Amino acid sequence: MKEKIVSIIESYGKTPERLMDILISVQEEFRCVSDEAVSIIASEIGVSEADVNQTKSFYHFFTTQPVGKYAVYLNNAAVSKMMGMDEVSDEFEKLTGVKFGQCTPDGLISLHYTACIGMSDQEPAALINSVVFTELNREKVKKIVSNMQDGKPVESMVGEYGDGNNAHPLVKAMVKNNIRRPGPVCLSEYDIGKSINKALSMEPKAVIEEVKSSYLRGRGGAGFPAGLKWQFCAQEKGDRYVLCNADEGEPGTFKDRILLTERAPMVFEGMIIAGWAIGAKEGIIYLRYEYRYLLEFLNSVLDDLRNKNLLGKNILGKGFDFDIRIQLGAGAYVCGEESALVESTEGKRGEPRNRPPFPVQKGYLDKPSIINNVETFCSAVKIVENGGKWFKEMGTEESTGTKLLSISGDCKKPGVYEVEWGMTLKEMLDMVGADTTQAVQVAGPSGVCVPPSQFDRKIAIEDLNTGGSMIVIGENRDLIKDVVLNFMEFFEDESCGSCITCRSFNMILRKQVQRVVDGKAIKPDLDNMLEWGKIMQNTSRCGLGQTAANPIASTINNFRDLYESMVKDVEFQSDFDLEKAIAESCEAVGRPPHVHE
Ligand SMILES: Cc1cc2nc3c(=O)[nH]c(=O)nc-3n(C[C@H](O)[C@H](O)[C@H](O)COP(=O)(O)O)c2cc1C
Ligand code: SF4
Image (cartoon, rainbow, N blue to C red; front, side):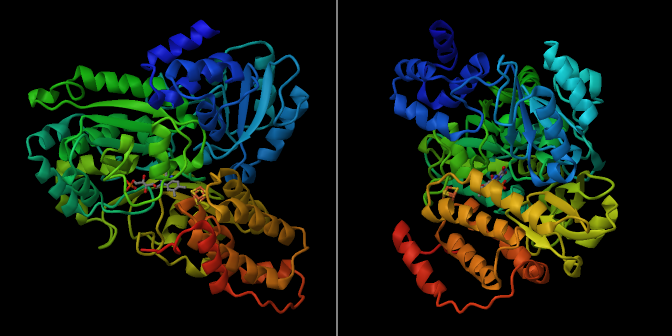
């Protein structure tokens, strides 16, 4: 064991910054990271066992006890449940004789729940030894379990049940890429290398100006202007880094998966162009572990780009050196938050940093870094090719260009659509064949739940902003139980625990929703929940805590009658003073109230 671990560590250069890779390789090799492994890793890379344990304990996919030879991770997100997850989990438990969270006594099969795995268009879905199985039902589970009991390799099962139409044979998955509307930007015709060629014939500053002129805003959800971010970073001194955020953890989104499978060279091309623009030599793409099945394929694309002299030393003979490595995550939604992503890439717990300083000033290894979403990089490629003016003519004034939407839930045609910003929700619902819609959850759990009376609102950063997740909720769903409760369980699980309010209020609010579902809540509880949500919003360090009460706030505000029909009509005079409570909470966490831009 020691020999194997030492050779893994050596393959990553024996540095603490590569601790994530080391832990992932050890977990994959031994099906766990045991205490003995922790001790070997600590002494070999020269850090304390406590440091290794700190990182290890943060991520869902690291375990101290071995997972099964076949480790089944079934998605328990809202859409998976809507599409029949309960039957699938029941069948797995019946056939294996163990419950979720357990392993069969012979160590063959372990069952686990996991958060959204980026397959909302093909639920219920599960990862088995990092291979994806989609559209599961009792029949498929029977075959899969029988194959596992016969000792068949997981990859061989994919061929048996899947009609995977991914772009490359190296993508081992049962995944269909439901692309419904090839667009004028990310999903349009694409010539590998054309934009790099053009960018490298321009001054770096001119590339930044072109991106600025397009008014491209970040596609990861926050909508910060990409050109401005690149400019800020380019102005800083010293080594700089380009980071691509492929963590795609917001439940209901899967458009980055499509870009990574159908447009991988374009994603990397965007990173290379950004590297030229800001003067960086190294790029890192942070790939969520749930997309581990893309690793071999993505590495082959990087090799291809190197062979074409579009990546590596002296790119296209222009004296520009730039290379990209892939950093796997290990299961933590908060690592999509940019400063947590940086921490994780450095081999640490994915705990968000206080800002300022912002990553453009102090990012990866405390060096100036830009962090952009997968789709942002793809859009930049097309902007360099066709010009900022061309891009700006699409969309709205505040939200230029197109947006990839991951549409799932109760509709006839789920999938990824590239649409111009500015489309109304009504138009979107018509497009996907949704006719009995109770609500649309825009931007995932951290977004808003929009009722039919607001379906004429626009999908745009200035109105209904979204990183891409759009969940259609049909009229027969139990909105509070099936959706809101599930979202609150998600936030409770995913809080990193650094802030008192995020750590405790997520749990308290989830319990309150449970009380509503159980018919035990009283009317004043509704306003209390809204007030506690505001405290969280004001006192949490990062976007997770600041938005975690949104599922409750937007449903109480937009579906108040529904809540009132579920709670006891008991009046209760509260002397709760919100302003005072916020001030006290802020004092307790040692920070002024969060200021919203
Ligand atoms: C809890 C949390 C999770 C996030 N997850 C992602 C993610 O998976 N992908 C992403 O691009 N941005 C995510 N973001 C936003 C990033 O912090 C950041 O704004 C983004 O990567 C910047 O890239 P962009 O400007 O190109 O959008 C997340 C933010 C928060 C608070
Ligand atoms: S808000 Fe929540 S997730 Fe963000 S830093 Fe605080 S505890 Fe961690």
